[in-house]
Length: 187
Image (tube, rainbow, N blue to C red):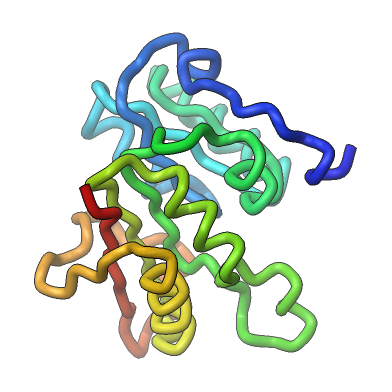
């Protein structure tokens, strides 16, 4: 089924069985950040969208072993899920840590930093909701932040990013430092 053929918003209650706040991580990799956030905040639901089915299954197995009933992971294209399934104003925070593939020409089609994706993220954030972006490539963070600002999110520079352990990818590749952006949807 093509992504554009899907047009039914799925309420978070149908996913988690409760009405707790929902945070979404896009591209959780091995799930280190997602699982740490879920363990630290059991009153919040954490939903992850991972492109690779094997990685998504591995994260869910780790969540089950740790008895984290506030975690769900789906293997899919984040642009499709957020654009077509996530309800309006229903996500309290998005986490995008190292969201874009390396800046190779062949990776451009998979790059998340687009105007359409920025609109979908803004549409699905609750008023006052936050979007956290981090990458070792400052140009990618700056480009994404600019696209998000154009759709009405406001950059917050003075507030540090949420405390989190560095991911395996970050430890391996971000030797030159990690660049952050935090944007909020106005109330």
